[in-house]
Image (cartoon, rainbow over all chains, first blue to last red; front, side):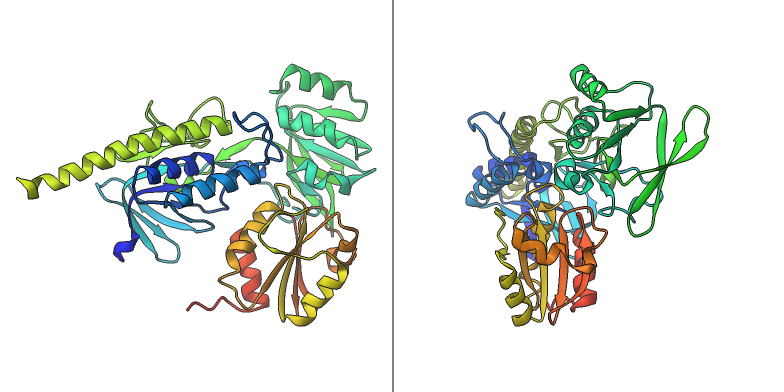
Length: 319
Length: 118
């Protein structure tokens, strides 16, 4: 392995948490590498407008992530996006990260900030009809369904707010939700209930999609009786929350039942020298501001840890 | 306006010129939305690696993008971006909505040829 592949710290995930960690680490003169299996910016890059990031009146997530990336690079941070991680060994003093192309990196400390992604239903036909009737973004694809009948799957704020927004285009919106109540805020529930174009199918799950060239209908299972029926529809919008991108960390660091990384007050995981920050951490609230705060804390803690490691390794030679 | 780092196609004539002057062309026709941005990012990352492919974007709502929206290969597409792969001026593949790096690579490798590493 090339000596150039050794870093003081490696950050996995280039969302706001990871980029902030990269800024702090690099500015502290830690040789730092950020790796990301997707694009730089994480979920933030997909946010049309951020209007509550202190000090910035209004900015797109794309632009804010571009500035954070530039800041990190200006301090000397290396960033590699769209890579694929094959394996990682976190338990020893020297951490190893191996990519699918065989490249191996080592570091004294690792910060995990892989973030999350929209949850999919994982039922038959979902992959086949993605982009042919199934969508995960109302603002992107809503206008394809002008005058059509569609369904929205989910019962949280996103599902109900997007159902209302889709009535600008669709002639009818059926919200399908697995529980007998919604998880959304009262105002979102009220707005959806008052909309004459929206109807509700409760305690039911979408268990399949069917069609030809395009989506033509969904299979709905009544969760009370187990009975199934087909509902003809032109489109399906799925808003059923987010899942942490932590599958590759199973058995490597402590995760809770939801797959979120368990950390202490300084973002340490249960493995020495391994920290975690951002939306993939176990926590109640997820915001860009919180992610940057997490990233700062993790970077400061990692810097202190790396400095201690360096002192320890120097001692035998000096005495 | 698309504020990506890809080369932008503004007119149908630009597109015709791009596919007539280049053997392998990938055009991402979309908006600055959550389904499109990841695909632009993937193309930006692959530009250096797939030097035998020209990567472009085109704004979906630009009337000139009718040249893409009316392609027979995109009939049935109901999700942006529409990503079109041209070889020697002909459409060889088209995809709808968000794609992963692996999916894009697989298409580039199959329809054009794998990246040449130095």
